[in-house]
Length: 189
Image (cartoon, rainbow, N blue to C red; front, side, top):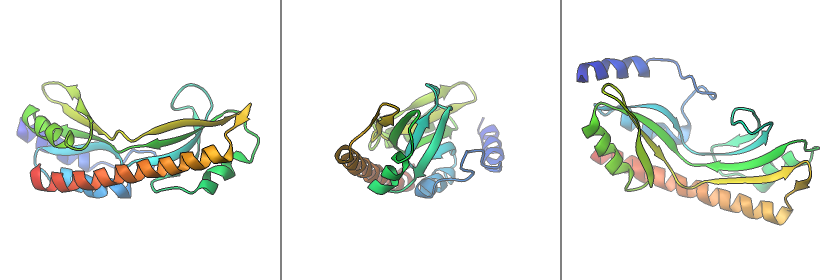
């Protein structure tokens, strides 16, 4: 079983990045390297956490225009500038936490990763469990999803300033937890 896993890991990590961005987020790169350097693990997808402004064209996730995206804290004017044009659809400000999918060589390795992850992140669990495939998902809990405009309203400036403040606070907390997680992975995984 482990020889199969090692080959699968080598093949997967040798492939081109298929994400929309085309590369690993800078803020999660060290975590990816640390996990992928361990014998019984490799990452299959990841996001360090981000702040996005989306125009929803429908209720479906993949039917949105990305107006703005950042893997760093944001400024109020970065959001306000996107609200100057005529608004035809819902505009959402989203602050998303770290998300990580890790393929594990077996239940024992998955349990070890879950035990480590749950010291920092409340949301960690096995999302795929079969004889040959075990995947652990780790998600931070700091998240904001807020509608800030549609064709009938635009959130007032005071609300938007506070929303940006809390979004940045959550982003920093996500970053702090990610750094703590990296230290634990390096020493305990």
